Amino acid sequence: MAKKILVTGGTGYIGSHTVVELQNSGYEVVVVDNLSNSSADVLDNIEKISGIKPAFEQFDLADKAKTDNFFARTPGIEAIIHFAASKAVGESVQKPLMYYRNNLVSLMNLMDCQVKYGVANIVFSSSCTVYGQPDVLPVTEKTPRKDAESPYGNTKRVNEDILSDSIAAHPEITGIALRYFNPIGAHPTAIIGELPLGVPQNLVPFITQTAAGLRDELMVFGDDYDTIDGSAVRDYINVVDLAKAHVVAIARLLEGKNKKNYEIFNLGTGNGLSVLEVVNGFEKATGVKLNYKIVGRRAGDIEKIWADTTFANEELGWKAEKELEETLLSAWLWEKKLRGIK
Ligand code: UD1
Image 1: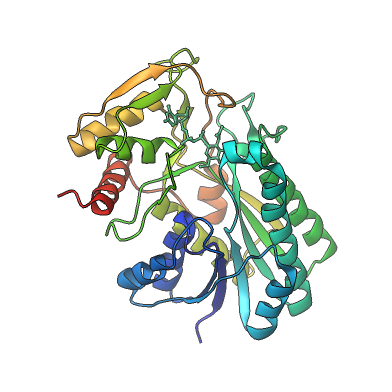
Image 2: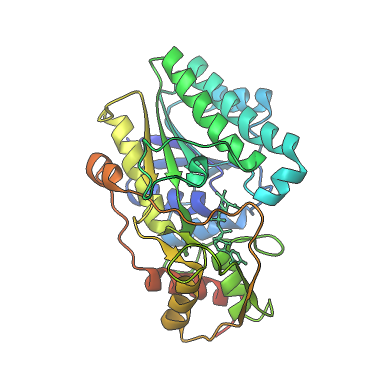
């Protein structure tokens, strides 16, 4: 019988790509999402790719009674992948209580239910934001974490602590925190992808919307960083590669291959790219000329970060495979599909 996996936030950007990869690997997926930043249509789009529409329940995991009731009615869940969270850095500065409530309480409710209903395994979406601006690059999983720059970043850090402390107290639970670098791109079918609400804050959706004519020009935030061309450097990872890492992490827990009850892996490519390199890569991959101008630095941005992927490659047995241009082209094909551009 197929193993049943609960994917919270499964209609979101990374969640939806992960649901597809789990289904492709033979897992049965149940999605819980409050649809605060996504749409139920995504479930139909998942079905178009995998042939299977996942079971779905709409509620907020910060609601303890509803979460408990869901687990009481849904036996047989073997593992949880917890994506559901608020993720806009700027908004988190304006609404810290909302961010702490959504992001911390939902994990605590889930872990209470893990103990109560005997759900042994959890994979958590963390972020390279926990490293801040590291003193030494690339960052390994042993690189010390730094104080968060925003309430959003702090929720990732505190949730990692909630996981590790709870797992220490409950040895029947095993968990993996995956620290994502910068996920970009869309499914190669262009049937699912990123759906930012309003003006995109992240680089690649802003690029594709500019190319599609929704925005006049991209603003490149800063050209005076200590980097190859002065623009800031990040480790951009294809979202399907990232999704596949979750399938590997789930199998690791279900098959008991984990070395410790709580493990952490960096998910990146190991390559740092500047903003201008991404802009050039986009133009090369798509043949579309991009309007952009250099402006001042964005408050709260770090200068450069990229992953040391040795531990993920060797211990998890996973490696990012897709090239930048293929990934940027997938983001463009998705944007064109959304806007009806031929
Ligand atoms: C941001 C968050 C990070 C979070 C991630 C979630 C900050 C400081 N960090 O990462 O905590 O986990 O989003 O998706 O907000 N850029 C431009 N012009 C734009 C947009 C971005 O030049 O219009 C630049 C940025 O300055 C940065 C790079 O592109 O150097 C990537 O930016 P972005 O996609 O927003 O990701 P991060 O800032 O790395």
